Amino acid sequence: MSKRLFDLVLSSLGLLVLAPVLLLMALAVKLDSAGPVFFRQERVGRYGQPFRIHKFRTMRHDQGGQGLQITVGADRRITRVGGFLRRTKLDELPQLIDVWVGSMSLVGPRPEVPRYVAHYPAAMREKVLSVRPGITDIASIEYRDESSVLAQAADPEQAYIHEVLPHKLALAASYVDQASVWMDVRLIWRTIRVIARG
Image (cartoon, rainbow, N blue to C red; front, side, top):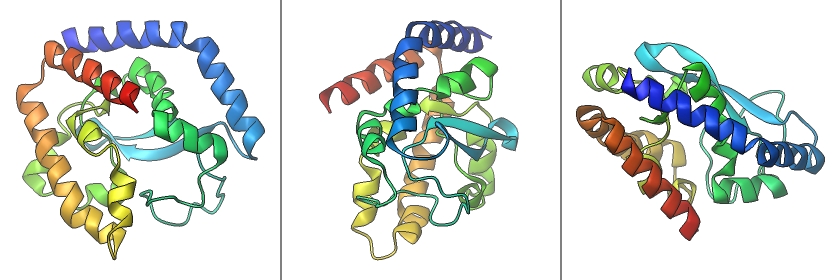
């Protein structure tokens, strides 16, 4: 209850205070390229329940929805405004909506698409999906330049599944074992410091 209250209060304040900034970002996304302001994608949430995440759209709109579900290096699909939003992680801010409605938490394991959740070992899946997914977590900080790392692999998707994903899951499981509001505060502060350093 204390974690949910913490999420609800901070997400409400965040949406209220950042409303002008969010509107400006939405306008920039709309003017930069054709397509919707938000990128909506199915992710797997708590207890395996699917939900549609909110992010500012950072790529050219693909109505077919084909292609990799990971971003690799200087992806040609990324728009000019999208590149800035990705570097600064501002594309993640609309997830405050998901926190407010209860699909996500401010801090927790990052939500994956069903395609990659299918690769979770059974015991790890049960543990990691026992909590709400978050906007940030330890893995988000450690893999801030994930797309650059994957760009160096011969097969980026296989590298993600067999190398990156297992480490992310281990970090997520560690968070679940130690989760507390105080830990969330520390991870939020650490995230802000990492983003501020660029």
